[in-house]
Length: 140
Image (cartoon, rainbow, N blue to C red):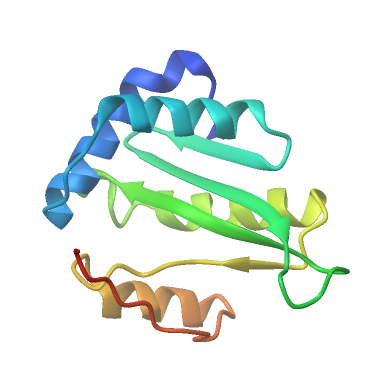
């Protein structure tokens, strides 16, 4: 596992397509490229990549307390054939280490209901995460 570079954009796009297909979401190639490049170039952003898996996060000031910095997972994907082999845990640990070394006081992870949300919730809880909020989405 390593931090992604611009040379990884084709593989990141491939995984982004798989992620969006699994969710039934639209994907815009340019948006993925621009966002990935900004995370790669930003000291407060990161993308980790390994065979068939990737995760990205961003650190920002916590709205309710200026003395805290919070990392937010933006995406986390593991190809089906790589699941159960430790890639998900390795990505999660890498994000935690990165966030801590870059001054974040917490890491917020997301669980997509359409992608084994209950299973992912169990993983989070086993790693010491607690439920914080529920997110709801409505297309307008």
